[in-house]
Length: 381
Image (cartoon, rainbow, N blue to C red):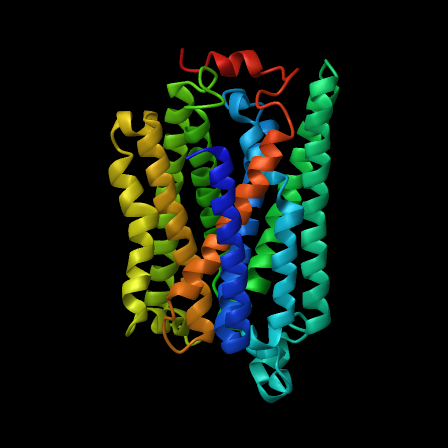
């Protein structure tokens, strides 16, 4: 399929997703806002994962990844755009967050104790502050990267290293709080000491999958000759490793709550492991861990662009399902997976593709004047 036809298909999916979202918000607001929260959070997570991926490699002075640096950078440049649908979720706060409904905090003694943190003004302030902070660092890093293309020397590289180090510290704090606010507070009585690292593991695994999918595609086209089997192999190893890491955190959180058997913790899993929710609950680790673990064990599958891209797509589908299982059981009486959910998810995927391809086209695919470019082009030779 030509690039023009791909763009037309993406625009059609975007329009269909927008129409499905508007219809759901009118016909069933709770279901509609739940679907929007899932997709908006995943869209933002993928953009942030590109930013985290880039910052980690700058802070650690890694050089192997430079040949495809524009891919995580393109994801990172979408943070300001991804912040908008996440901010729009505020409009559906009364449908999603039971503690925001009139009289909820006063009538529940447990929530009343938490009201110093869980209250609408502070929730909105934190949301705006987190999104603004992440967007600011996204713009600063992107500007420094584009300036490096025009300015030989190490000035911009050192600036990106400093920005990355500061961003990583702030991200660890702010993303943890954002996960508590936007997802955990859907069930305000529930607590988990592992929830923040669980959400980070999911974010980074999904981000690696998105990067691997894009790099595998570019390795057969625009970056053929620059992307080596070594690059694909290392991306495959990263995806393999973080699939195991996500599964480890998933199991640890479940087991800690299961054998602790505390009243404030067990309702989360009690709902998700019963009735019609149970098959979906079991399917998420199959897609996010079992399939990538089995398929990526051999060396050749990590070096083959088609195999790597296929597994990356499975992981991304599992990431969406995992987020759906975090959100939907908290606000819906039963699973509501149908055409609206699929169309809304496809619309967000189309928006991500359109914005990312535009970001990739706005700068040279091979970054100029990067001190590690030569090392990266020889990677695995």
